[in-house]
Amino acid sequence: MKIGDKVRFLSEVGGGIVAGFQGKNIVLVEDEDGFQVPMRITEVVVVGDENYDTRHVVEAKATSVKAALAANEEEEESEPADKPITFKAKPEERQGGDKLSVFLAFVPMNVKELMQTRFETYLVNDSNYYLRYTYLTAEGTAWQIRAEGEIEPNTKEFIEEFGREDLNEFEHCCIQFLAYKRDKHFLLKPPVNADVRMDPVKFYKLHAFRENPFFEQPSLIYTLIENDIQKVKL
Image 1 (tube, rainbow, N blue to C red):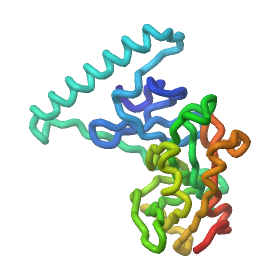
Image 2: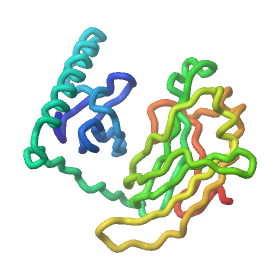
Image 3: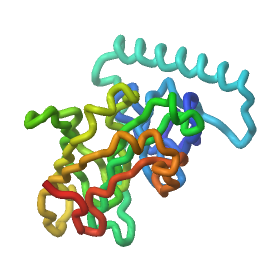
């Protein structure tokens, strides 16, 4: 597998073009909207223009797992100087992306079975800025960091997976982030503290999950800041 290969996901619908790698286990897949999605190498397979039936996907996944394990063993046995250099392309900027737009998204893993499905949390960075973020939840007056890190421009970051039994933990959450650019001058943006109070009942209502430009399936999306205008504040 190399940069430029066309791949598809094995455990979910979708795919795209290999844009780079993070370490030896994560591949960055750029979808048709230009978002780079981090996936485990074992969860993607290189494809051509032909159609794949279920049997072929199972065989391809097994082959991909064996290849990844073999590559890991070879890397561990090799000297550091012998390891290949992984090239990572710089994120591309888009017109209109110099105004911050950031969203908190909850995506059902199976929207057709909304009453039983689990959910995934994403932070969507729809701007030309890098974001250094922390994602926190509150229990009374005490706060807990659930995730922290950096999101590249015009990408989305997977935060965590959860079930309905965890909904009470997300009723009050906060996303803090700083925006900046690398290797170039940029307009300074103020730090953002976005306070989100969620209604767990929405996770039981199909109409709360709507079509959107970031995910293939309907999602519950909270706007933290849009076109530099903060929607929720502390």
